[in-house]
Length: 298
Image 1: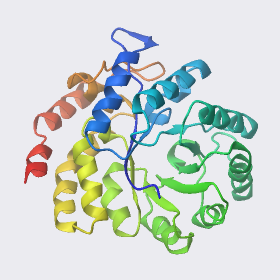
Image 2: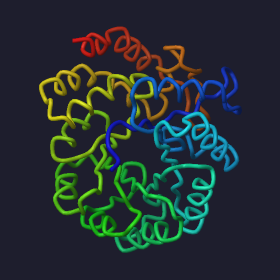
Image 3: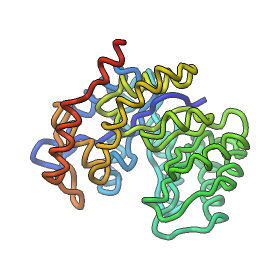
């Protein structure tokens, strides 16, 4: 079962040159994540700026993460798109590169019907020979995978989980209640991690864990163990940080924070731009006031 905190990895670029991936920083990021207790790594998702990575760059990022992880945690590579045949090809390639699973987002822009969504994911699952995590993020794709469609898809061998970023606890509750045993619902929103686990979810694919892997891991560990007093305390302490990660469109804020913390450069690629001055001041204030380490030590 997919369970715990999975980090939606940023893709570090070289300082002053967003055209080049900083491979050394990426390897260091993987090591810091594993040391921080995360349950898995998710390269080449939205947070990894996949829309502006070439095919070759995406393959290189996946290969580096798999190589650096060395089997210590699973790697679930982002392989989604809006061309079904292409998604099959990318998912097969991720398998060849050593990925343990694939995160496949709902097709964007062409806005398929629910039957089109079902057939898209079923086609990929039946041909890619890699465990599939569905990704429902209607705010970016323009289409919502309804709970009944996710429940149908959960019956297909090889479709093992959903990253739910619709923001609907009712949807998560419905999926948990009706999907087969072993199918995991993962939060796609850091701030909803605790509520989604409370209704039966199994964890989160997290943006914030790029910079606070220990705290996000501690939150999911406590919540999944039923230690809700501790989980609530961590949730309250993490909430301002989680909100700050979305002051500007993801991954602008988390990369900016990573730059401020010396994890990697804060470079993003166009059409993304550096964080606005006002939001940067808010982010700096939140980072300066971060009290998560005290909570972990309590």
